Image (cartoon, rainbow, N blue to C red; front, side):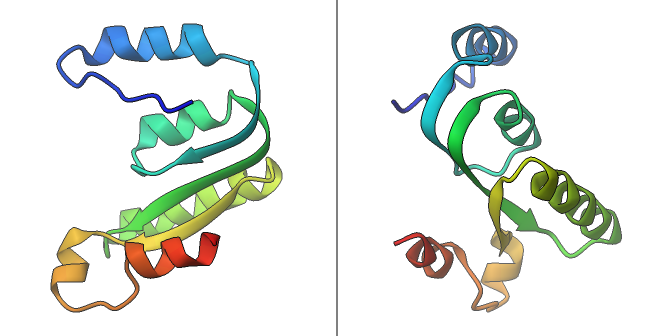
Length: 105
């Protein structure tokens, strides 16, 4: 099941998402967008396998955030890949989304 947020109604969509998926059990959950709210919701969905993408932005606060979120994900047994954000990819970083997506196959 694929769920796409209606970005025009953000608050109502988040509430609807929690209502529909909170503590329900699924086989696999994958978060592609890497947004904080999506990663937060990932903690409350039961599944055998969870996977998400985290985006490295190059700032010190982002490095601290990635370190802390990696600890939380290890505790909850959530797999993740760290990718460069769009600005870093445009600056010719080769570690990008298509290459990491191939690691899932």
